[in-house]
Length: 245
Ligand code: BT5
Image (cartoon, rainbow, N blue to C red; front, side, top):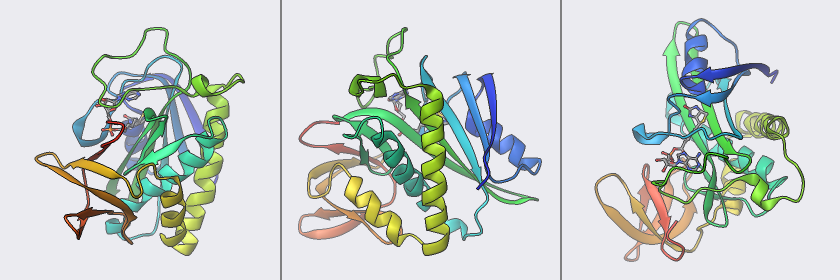
């Protein structure tokens, strides 16, 4: 994939900018990076804080896949981000579906969105990565305690180093997904998952379900053992019971 990178000082949201340009026919590989986001988006309508020294980036993909499989691209992105961030902090782990944690603290969040238009299917993968300690401090009400890459590295890390590492890994794992399907992604994801075999609590917006995380189903759902029976979780937030993340 050829990445065409555009840098902005400030945007509402890098995901929104990619979707705007996709509507006008932008090609796969368009990458939007912003220093600031006034309306950074999390999943399920939540807010993403683009603190200073953070990387906010979004990449446009135009896969020829069934829209039912688009959610698998979130897991492809998590595997790619895991590989890239592990270069700087080898302890990085994935928490379902696509949070990246170090020592149980959140260093990166991923939001995948899609749009159908006259130029076909557009999928945007947006990543927010905390690179260094924000001078302004963190918001108080984060659901999972936040952290940054520099806390785990002896070396200086520039935002551009992180951007390049993410794009390289995304290219590798996206190509693998397009050529070989979800199987290799599932395998890599499970190896990097923080909670396999651990008791977790899943909040689906209404209720909390407690069970043992078994791994991923073929379609990317979380397999959870609840009272001896396997359940599939399609959407929700996972907390590890042991570490309360
Ligand atoms: C996510 O949502 O983690 C997806 C975040 C994706 C952000 C990127 S930045 C580039 C691109 N453009 C966008 O507009 N979005 C994407 P979720 O799992 O819903 O987590 C959101 C929650 O994470 C918030 O409710 C906070 O508790 C917490 N949070 C917000 N900012 C954070 C930060 N900088 N570091 C750690 N946690 C944060």
